[in-house]
Length: 373
Image (cartoon, rainbow, N blue to C red; front, top):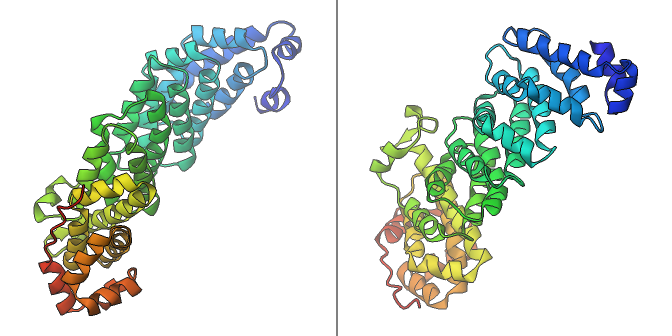
């Protein structure tokens, strides 16, 4: 089998026919029959899939593809993806074969989706322990959403569900792919806001990054207002919010001062995300002011028990002060000249110089910024 794969990989359909004296289809039939009889055992599964792939991926090999599909080839591959006995290398080979079928055209993508392929691939992405397998699964989901209007929303919903996965890699890949698929769908679901914001609690920087990038993308859709309001509220976490933390993020060993550490991580990420958004769009910055972001950032600086929250809040607050003179004046009066100038000199390091007096000042500030138009 290895010799066949080595000699025939990359050959065209006519070349394969010549090699088998016009009986290539017969050999493919035997391969598929062997696969269907033995795939449950996981024995030589990778080799079988590689051998079948030689036919499916061959140039002008539409006849071979049709023959494979006629015997339920897609269903067999999808079952392999969920098979406990299958190794990661087997799943990768199955996903590659599935991708070869999907890129052939819309009707093949629809066939995969009709066979509950979106769910099978999404579950494989969520449960796999291999980054390579997850990357391949992500690619297929993206491919199934492209040029496939009947099922693009199904793929979109599957990706949203993956945001709540316990696998950080799956969360990262889902958030990354959602930006692409969301443009294809042309709208953002209301159900995307909560799981996206929960990603800000992740201990993994790459997940937090993709979450912020996805939030930036949400600013182009109808859920923009909801996302902005929620970001501001995350700057002011309460003990009751701990009940909303997913089990994957919550750990009794991380509890601090009655509020779980993931909430402080989320607070820091929200502050950072707000800072990123306001620098992109002046209208968004103005709306954040109307939503109370400035007061909330001051709260985070003075009340957070997590240095990173204080740091990110301080960095984001600086932009508002330098952009809106009346906010700068109000904050300067509230802080006092000494505190204000110390802060403005090094906004990103002010958290290192906090003392009880400064914390008390921050905790007692109440700004009146109603003059915002």
